[in-house]
Image (cartoon, rainbow, N blue to C red; front, side, top):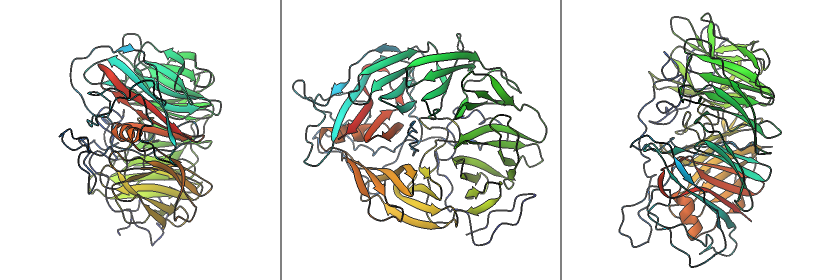
Length: 539
């Protein structure tokens, strides 16, 4: 392995550690066009490649035995969203692109499909579009469930007419007894046990910035466009537990640009930070009041922030000849730094896997070299992870954030980082790295035609989603600290439920909390037909 180039003004790099082989693949590691507000700034981040349709994983299966004679379905990649229960994320490639005229969606309210039959069940024909179009929604979700398997609790569908580009439905949070989704211009809370609508907030304008993070009491911030849709500058507090809208304040945009089409959001406790092309600021969650901003042209200018575990770091662009990138700690109240780490020339930040401990995925867009760095509490490099595999990165198209966090394919606890590795779209194994040594602790294979992805890590144990082969049932599993055979926490049902599980779009999000597993789409087609929105599994 080659050694990571030595950045300027940094202590010598410890020997024995090299960069991870295998640069991020096309559509992975760099944000899709328009998703990241810094995509047009010089040198940061790298200009994104074209996002392509998901390929079938190695040994990809053919069409299900439906007798329909249709072309084989492609195994969906997975995009897991963070929930309030600190469920971390994995990912596929962002959104499926559509085309057509631009018009406001017209929603038609739908009741959830109960798991028990309410009449003659209809068959999901498995047409591969992930939205249920071309077939009716089954009424008996557990038809074909085998002994010992857990249940599909409910399926929520929606019928909307929208623009050709589709209707966004990115947000997903699990807060108390509600699972919360954004659907177009609304935030909707559904009961976790029955899927029935508990509350709905109509924001009346497009949501252009959100985060999967919440405060301990279940509040979060979304950013919406102004009344005429010309600027993404209206900040709103949302109480996800109470189902109520709080304060609304206009974002005063400093810096080069006074308007933006999107913002990135990160949140820790009572502080949240926003970033848009050319500017950033941090605010108090309880009031919306600004805490700090840095629009100055000198030195290394923070461009975006990442937060978590009572800590915040900035990714800054330096005004030197090489336009290098610097990682800085940032005081939550003032933004002032006490340490910084300068990346080598040409290296950009692909992802922030964790803020505390600080784990950064960096790559060189020219040489295609890549490194995952672990920094200590003083901003010094502990090591660089070293191991074989193609490790997936999917920032910018996440279901819960357009920034560098909640990107996917990873989970981090106090001493271990867990990364998904596989082909260019799906994880066929999970690799656990020791943060203290940078070396591989253990590996876990998904199995034949299956997908394995991290969900959450705590106390040395990893919770993961192991999706089955095409039209096959998946499961939620827990790996022990030393690796080895996992324990099954939730065994998803076979039959009708498995076909629905498998048919969600590649841009899907998920969360596991309190023994329930939730699957959701992040974008609707909006063709005035019933579409799958949100599905729940449990005991």
